[in-house]
Length: 155
Image 1 (cartoon, rainbow, N blue to C red):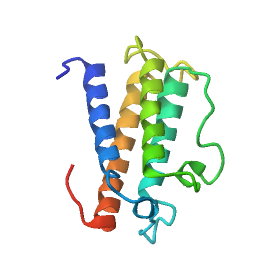
Image 2 (image 1 turned 120 degrees about the vertical axis):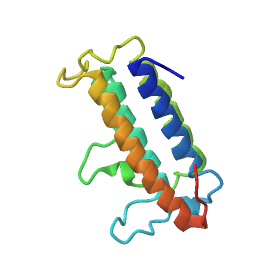
Image 3 (image 1 turned 180 degrees about the vertical axis):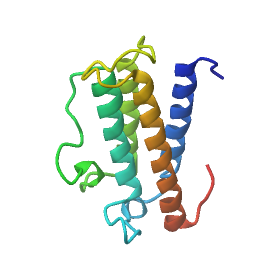
């Protein structure tokens, strides 16, 4: 277990990422693409993972790390929630996992107190905290979506 600030943040983010991925494990495409919440008609388990992929791309790789990558959420409403016919649990999880590698690579050697490389508006500390809270919040959404899909609960 890490004892330094950045190590603790990364450890919690890695735990939340793994938990999010676990929430779609074993779901069919139909279950993972279902949007059972009337108040959130675009929210599906796959859509949550696609959105988290876009969150990591923007905040960690582009904003904090300064990577020259295209944003995955250009447009209004935010298109990162939308599914294509090609989006399957396996492909969406693979894309999310690939983004983890990009994010961690973009921030290799960057300390929490440094300014974000794109805008300089935020510290890396703030960006990591923001991504942690957003990933935790959406992992909670995945808890509900999974329970509605097949009754499964737990980490």
